[in-house]
Image (cartoon, rainbow, N blue to C red; front, side):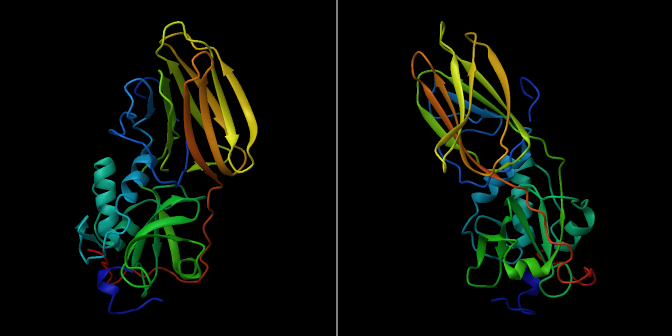
Length: 299
């Protein structure tokens, strides 16, 4: 629920073509801009193509967790629901969204099919379009709540009865692409988690290179953390200073690790990934139709 409704209702290629993931997971050991997600090492680097908008949106939104709810707010001092979406999109992509919830709902194309990170989801909390949040992976959303046990920016689930029963629909700002991850090994063991969540059945591309002359082959493994079973192993011959593009697809949900090991020196790079099935939202579960008259919530 947004500001004006609070009194009305109280609730209990940079180098080559880049490609997909939908990942919730908090960021870890990530530094630099999203144009090149550089590690703290000068020798080993992980980059995420800057065209992968979902990663930027989720990473930016997570910075606001715990920020207080302030009607009309648009900063880390405080946000309301539409103000939160405004600052996240502006900071992550440079795009200015309408500030009102109704304007957002009416101005953007509807999502047909499963939800992806970055999609905006709308709710009828007091009659009409009155609250908005952003999908961060699976059924999870991040939003600025004005009422309830926790007020301010928090994570909730579309599976919760309150949100499921008041869900009106979703809107998509960009046509999303899949990610390409660029990994360069050069002497340091590093690890990272991605912010956005990998969707089952969709391919991602892994571009691997080694900076060391005369380096040996790199072994790429995809391992399920929860089962601790090696699901797939690829051996890739890497010419010194060259990149090799590898496509892979996760067919099962769960927690996974993509690891690259330089066979001769033993350098290791680990990328932790949460793989989920895309969330299919309820179809008009409450039988409500959105009403647009008089609501400019969050403006």
